[in-house]
Each structure stands twice: as C-alpha cells, then as structure tokens.
View (cartoon, rainbow, N blue to C red):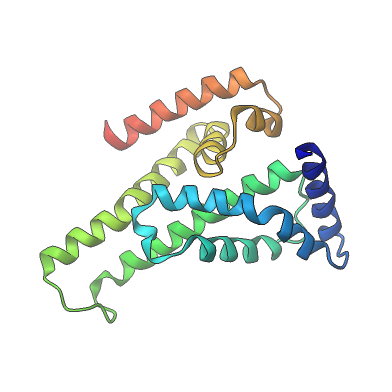
Length: 188
C-alpha cells in the first residue's frame, strides 16, 4: 500500500509540474500528513517557533513549494527533502526577523534583562545551527544534505541513501561524521 501511495505522489508531482488540473489538490491530500510530521519535528526542536503553529508552518511551506511548480521533482522523497529545507528556511527567516526587531518595534514593556534572556533563548540556537550548517555545506555539501534530510525531514538512512544514490552504510558513516563536526562547531 505504501509503495502504491509513493508512486502516486511521484506521478502527481509530474502532473502538477505539467499543469494538470486537480493535481495540486490531490498532491496536498496525499502529502499533508507527512508534511505535518516534518513540521512537528521542526517545532519540537525549535524553542523560538512557539509563536508559529505546526499547521501554519505546513501551509507556508506548501505555498512556497507550489510556487516552484516547475521544479523537476524526482520522486516523493525529493519532494519531502525540499519541503524540510523550506520549513527550515521559514524558521530561520522568522528568527532573523525577531533578532532584527529586538530594538523595539511595538514590543511590550519588560525589563531589559528579561528581554535579552528571551531573545537569546528564542533565536540563538536556530541561528547558530544555521550558521554551522552553512559552514558544513562548504566543507562537505553531501553531509549537509544528510543532516537536512535526517534531522529536519526525519528521513531514514535508507531513504536518504536512495535519494543520494549511495549505500545506507555510507549515509550512516557520513551522518555520524556530520553530527560530530556540528557538535564540535556548536559546543567545542
């Protein structure tokens, strides 16, 4: 059943790209649950996303994805990989806007100490991770992709291996190396 559904999603991605009527609605119907799962994973890991609901993140990401209607989606896994990346970018953009607005902008009256504590807790982690991932992408682009697919999209090593055309053992090894590299960058 799952294989049939995966094939249907892949077919609908092609139909959507080709402008077939009703493809977008059917695609949303088949992908919505998985998109919510990816978004929920993002929301669990990101403290600063509390002002954003999972449904809002899914909808904003989906709107960005359908704006890319001409994207040559390879298959369902590629679509979800890009969706995870888009969700990550949405959260990064929101964190950057929050940091830019720290200097006022209609914020409620609270003490300066409390405001600094809140701002740092909300956006620091995500922005630090984004900067570390940008550095990792320069050092090893494939490891960066693996982190995005594994951490942000919740994809299995087998799914990632299939997308990248390598063995699951290679993905396992590079996932461990990328985690160690990121840990050193963030905490070392």
